[in-house]
Length: 112
Length: 115
Image 1 (cartoon, chains in turn red, brown):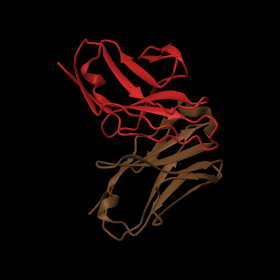
Image 2: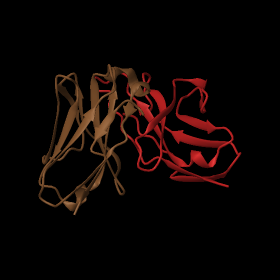
Image 3: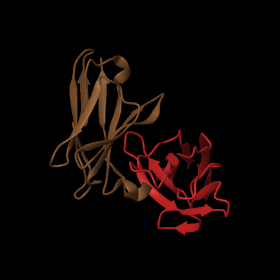
Image 4: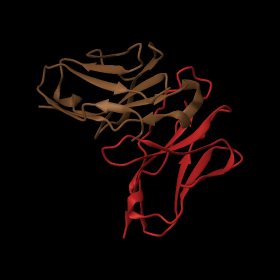
Protein backbone atom coordinates (compact mmCIF):
# COMPACT_ATOMS: atom_id res chain seq x y z
CA UNK A 1 0.00 0.00 0.00
CA UNK A 2 1.23 3.47 -0.82
CA UNK A 3 2.70 5.43 2.08
CA UNK A 4 1.22 8.82 2.85
CA UNK A 5 2.77 11.88 4.45
CA UNK A 6 0.72 14.68 5.94
CA UNK A 7 1.41 17.45 8.47
CA UNK A 8 1.15 16.35 12.08
CA UNK A 9 -0.87 19.37 13.14
CA UNK A 10 -2.51 22.54 11.85
CA UNK A 11 -4.20 25.51 13.49
CA UNK A 12 -6.97 27.61 12.04
CA UNK A 13 -9.66 30.07 13.08
CA UNK A 14 -13.38 29.83 12.72
CA UNK A 15 -14.66 30.87 9.33
CA UNK A 16 -11.40 30.23 7.51
CA UNK A 17 -10.81 27.74 4.74
CA UNK A 18 -8.45 24.94 5.70
CA UNK A 19 -6.36 22.98 3.23
CA UNK A 20 -4.60 19.81 4.33
CA UNK A 21 -2.16 18.35 1.85
CA UNK A 22 -1.17 14.72 1.71
CA UNK A 23 1.79 13.34 -0.23
CA UNK A 24 1.62 9.88 -1.76
CA UNK A 25 4.49 9.61 -4.21
CA UNK A 26 4.12 5.86 -4.72
CA UNK A 27 0.43 5.84 -5.51
CA UNK A 28 -0.54 3.00 -7.83
CA UNK A 29 -2.76 3.17 -10.85
CA UNK A 30 -5.67 1.46 -9.12
CA UNK A 31 -5.43 3.44 -5.88
CA UNK A 32 -8.14 5.79 -4.68
CA UNK A 33 -7.51 8.58 -2.18
CA UNK A 34 -9.79 8.65 0.83
CA UNK A 35 -10.02 11.01 3.77
CA UNK A 36 -11.42 10.19 7.18
CA UNK A 37 -12.20 12.41 10.15
CA UNK A 38 -11.91 11.30 13.75
CA UNK A 39 -13.14 13.08 16.85
CA UNK A 40 -11.69 12.15 20.27
CA UNK A 41 -12.94 8.78 21.52
CA UNK A 42 -15.01 8.22 18.37
CA UNK A 43 -14.49 5.98 15.37
CA UNK A 44 -13.18 7.47 12.11
CA UNK A 45 -15.81 8.81 9.74
CA UNK A 46 -15.57 8.85 5.95
CA UNK A 47 -15.33 12.38 4.51
CA UNK A 48 -14.52 12.12 0.83
CA UNK A 49 -12.90 9.92 -1.79
CA UNK A 50 -11.45 10.64 -5.21
CA UNK A 51 -9.33 9.27 -8.02
CA UNK A 52 -8.31 12.33 -10.00
CA UNK A 53 -9.11 16.03 -10.55
CA UNK A 54 -11.66 17.41 -8.11
CA UNK A 55 -14.39 15.94 -5.99
CA UNK A 56 -16.83 17.97 -3.91
CA UNK A 57 -19.52 16.98 -1.46
CA UNK A 58 -21.50 18.78 1.21
CA UNK A 59 -18.63 18.55 3.66
CA UNK A 60 -15.37 19.07 1.76
CA UNK A 61 -13.55 19.21 -1.54
CA UNK A 62 -10.69 17.03 -2.64
CA UNK A 63 -8.18 18.29 -5.18
CA UNK A 64 -5.94 15.80 -6.94
CA UNK A 65 -3.33 17.01 -9.49
CA UNK A 66 -2.71 15.17 -12.72
CA UNK A 67 0.29 13.22 -11.41
CA UNK A 68 -1.77 12.08 -8.37
CA UNK A 69 1.32 12.20 -6.15
CA UNK A 70 -0.45 14.44 -3.70
CA UNK A 71 -3.95 15.51 -2.75
CA UNK A 72 -5.47 18.37 -0.83
CA UNK A 73 -8.49 18.19 1.43
CA UNK A 74 -10.25 21.53 1.58
CA UNK A 75 -12.66 22.37 4.39
CA UNK A 76 -14.60 25.58 3.71
CA UNK A 77 -15.34 27.98 6.56
CA UNK A 78 -14.36 25.72 9.44
CA UNK A 79 -16.06 25.87 12.81
CA UNK A 80 -14.96 24.76 16.26
CA UNK A 81 -16.68 21.43 15.65
CA UNK A 82 -14.24 20.67 12.83
CA UNK A 83 -11.47 20.24 15.40
CA UNK A 84 -10.45 16.64 14.80
CA UNK A 85 -7.80 14.36 13.35
CA UNK A 86 -7.89 13.99 9.58
CA UNK A 87 -6.44 10.89 7.93
CA UNK A 88 -5.40 10.55 4.32
CA UNK A 89 -5.43 6.99 3.01
CA UNK A 90 -4.42 5.60 -0.34
CA UNK A 91 -6.19 2.36 -1.05
CA UNK A 92 -5.07 -0.55 -3.16
CA UNK A 93 -8.26 -1.31 -4.97
CA UNK A 94 -6.95 -4.64 -6.20
CA UNK A 95 -6.35 -6.00 -2.72
CA UNK A 96 -8.54 -8.90 -1.77
CA UNK A 97 -8.77 -7.61 1.76
CA UNK A 98 -9.43 -3.93 1.33
CA UNK A 99 -8.04 -3.25 4.79
CA UNK A 100 -7.38 0.37 5.64
CA UNK A 101 -3.97 1.32 6.98
CA UNK A 102 -4.03 4.58 8.88
CA UNK A 103 -1.06 6.91 9.21
CA UNK A 104 -0.56 9.43 12.00
CA UNK A 105 -3.10 11.87 10.60
CA UNK A 106 -3.28 15.65 10.88
CA UNK A 107 -4.64 17.13 14.07
CA UNK A 108 -6.62 20.23 13.15
CA UNK A 109 -7.27 22.71 15.92
CA UNK A 110 -9.87 25.36 15.13
CA UNK A 111 -9.75 28.40 17.39
CA UNK A 112 -12.50 30.95 18.02
CA UNK B 1 -25.55 6.09 15.06
CA UNK B 2 -23.28 4.61 12.39
CA UNK B 3 -25.06 1.26 12.30
CA UNK B 4 -22.05 -0.60 13.70
CA UNK B 5 -22.67 -1.58 17.31
CA UNK B 6 -19.89 -2.29 19.74
CA UNK B 7 -20.33 -3.56 23.27
CA UNK B 8 -19.41 -2.87 25.94
CA UNK B 9 -18.54 0.82 25.62
CA UNK B 10 -16.23 0.70 28.60
CA UNK B 11 -14.40 -2.16 30.25
CA UNK B 12 -12.10 -2.12 33.25
CA UNK B 13 -10.26 -5.28 34.14
CA UNK B 14 -7.14 -6.50 35.90
CA UNK B 15 -3.89 -7.70 34.41
CA UNK B 16 -3.90 -11.36 33.49
CA UNK B 17 -7.61 -11.44 32.81
CA UNK B 18 -9.48 -12.24 29.62
CA UNK B 19 -12.18 -10.13 27.98
CA UNK B 20 -14.41 -10.37 24.94
CA UNK B 21 -15.39 -7.40 22.81
CA UNK B 22 -18.39 -7.70 20.57
CA UNK B 23 -19.22 -6.06 17.26
CA UNK B 24 -22.41 -6.15 15.22
CA UNK B 25 -21.78 -4.89 11.68
CA UNK B 26 -24.07 -2.61 9.75
CA UNK B 27 -26.97 -4.46 8.19
CA UNK B 28 -25.89 -6.04 4.91
CA UNK B 29 -22.16 -5.69 5.54
CA UNK B 30 -20.21 -8.92 5.23
CA UNK B 31 -16.75 -7.76 6.25
CA UNK B 32 -15.61 -6.84 9.75
CA UNK B 33 -12.34 -5.18 10.71
CA UNK B 34 -10.83 -4.70 14.15
CA UNK B 35 -8.54 -1.81 15.04
CA UNK B 36 -6.66 -0.86 18.19
CA UNK B 37 -5.98 2.75 19.04
CA UNK B 38 -3.67 3.72 21.86
CA UNK B 39 -2.19 7.13 22.54
CA UNK B 40 1.28 6.29 21.32
CA UNK B 41 0.42 3.95 18.44
CA UNK B 42 -2.43 5.53 16.53
CA UNK B 43 -4.93 3.33 14.71
CA UNK B 44 -3.49 -0.15 14.25
CA UNK B 45 -5.20 -2.72 12.05
CA UNK B 46 -5.61 -6.03 13.87
CA UNK B 47 -7.65 -8.45 11.81
CA UNK B 48 -10.34 -8.74 9.15
CA UNK B 49 -13.11 -11.27 8.61
CA UNK B 50 -15.26 -11.65 5.53
CA UNK B 51 -18.43 -13.71 5.68
CA UNK B 52 -17.12 -15.82 8.54
CA UNK B 53 -13.61 -16.38 7.25
CA UNK B 54 -10.40 -14.68 8.31
CA UNK B 55 -9.20 -12.54 5.41
CA UNK B 56 -6.26 -10.51 6.68
CA UNK B 57 -4.11 -10.16 9.77
CA UNK B 58 -2.28 -7.09 10.95
CA UNK B 59 -0.44 -6.35 14.15
CA UNK B 60 -2.47 -8.73 16.27
CA UNK B 61 -0.78 -10.34 19.25
CA UNK B 62 -0.94 -14.09 19.80
CA UNK B 63 -2.84 -13.39 23.04
CA UNK B 64 -5.62 -11.90 20.92
CA UNK B 65 -8.02 -13.82 18.74
CA UNK B 66 -11.20 -13.09 16.86
CA UNK B 67 -13.99 -14.80 15.03
CA UNK B 68 -17.02 -13.93 12.94
CA UNK B 69 -20.18 -15.89 13.53
CA UNK B 70 -22.84 -17.05 11.01
CA UNK B 71 -25.01 -14.05 11.88
CA UNK B 72 -21.96 -11.93 10.94
CA UNK B 73 -21.32 -10.44 14.35
CA UNK B 74 -17.73 -10.63 15.47
CA UNK B 75 -15.94 -11.03 18.76
CA UNK B 76 -12.42 -10.02 19.68
CA UNK B 77 -10.96 -12.02 22.55
CA UNK B 78 -8.10 -10.54 24.53
CA UNK B 79 -6.35 -12.77 27.06
CA UNK B 80 -3.52 -12.52 29.58
CA UNK B 81 -4.11 -8.81 29.57
CA UNK B 82 -1.27 -6.41 30.19
CA UNK B 83 -1.28 -2.74 31.11
CA UNK B 84 -0.18 -1.92 27.58
CA UNK B 85 -3.34 -3.42 26.16
CA UNK B 86 -5.30 -0.47 27.48
CA UNK B 87 -6.69 1.23 24.39
CA UNK B 88 -9.73 1.99 22.32
CA UNK B 89 -10.79 -0.95 20.19
CA UNK B 90 -12.77 -0.12 17.08
CA UNK B 91 -14.74 -2.35 14.80
CA UNK B 92 -15.56 -1.36 11.24
CA UNK B 93 -17.67 -3.05 8.61
CA UNK B 94 -18.10 -2.93 4.87
CA UNK B 95 -20.20 -4.66 2.26
CA UNK B 96 -17.31 -5.69 0.09
CA UNK B 97 -13.62 -5.44 0.96
CA UNK B 98 -12.88 -4.59 -2.65
CA UNK B 99 -15.07 -1.54 -2.47
CA UNK B 100 -12.22 0.59 -1.24
CA UNK B 101 -12.43 3.26 1.40
CA UNK B 102 -15.94 4.48 0.76
CA UNK B 103 -17.85 1.62 2.28
CA UNK B 104 -16.17 1.45 5.67
CA UNK B 105 -18.29 2.31 8.69
CA UNK B 106 -16.76 2.44 12.14
CA UNK B 107 -18.40 1.81 15.47
CA UNK B 108 -18.00 4.04 18.49
CA UNK B 109 -15.44 1.73 20.06
CA UNK B 110 -14.80 -0.09 23.32
CA UNK B 111 -12.49 1.60 25.79
CA UNK B 112 -10.49 -1.05 27.60
CA UNK B 113 -8.62 -0.14 30.74
CA UNK B 114 -6.32 -2.72 32.28
CA UNK B 115 -5.35 -2.00 35.88
